[in-house]
Image (cartoon, rainbow, N blue to C red; front, top):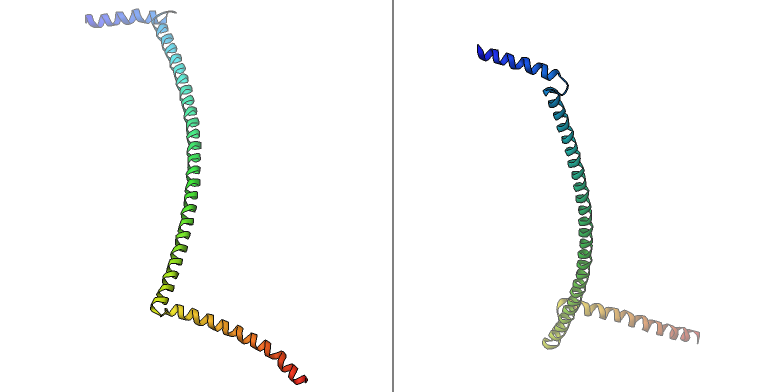
Length: 152
């Protein structure tokens, strides 16, 4: 029973003290209010710091993007130039190989005395063209002679 009486006595003394201005309740409330203001201030500082960090990261990202794009542009230009040079080398090598094959084919025909079917066809086509030209030239030269013979 004495413990119950002691707790009742503490409550009776605490209740009037909490009701007084400047009492324990008022001090707790003011402490909580100050702590809440401090937390709000800290929250504002953290938010401002986060926004500043985000702005810094955005600027760095933009700078990095610009650098990467510039680097990609240079790489593309260099690769285009290299591809152009390779293309020219390939064309030159193809031309040289074609000339060597033609020379080898000519030497083979000269040495062996025979030609490939392709070469024979090419020679036949060339001979046919020359024959047509010769026929046209001969026909043109004979026509004026006939007209002179009839007129006489």
